[in-house]
Image (cartoon, rainbow, N blue to C red; front, top):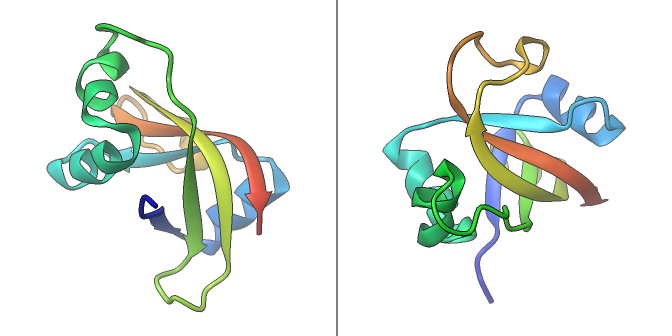
Length: 110
């Protein structure tokens, strides 16, 4: 079984995701996230498909969002797709900055 990717997020964003108000989560495009997303979405998608080369249909994967860093913190499992792009400043993105964008399709359990 593949290890599940766990992403800690602040309470404000966690609550907005659970309520359905926030449908995207952002991560900086850096080697740290390259390797984390590669392990979930696959090298082929992360370095080719996401940039419009080859199969550009984003795969849906399960990600765990955790409210904080503690193992005992509240968490929710979500089905997400991954793209690159700019984000919504109301959801924590800086205007004009490119991010990895996790599109939250469905919250499966909280």
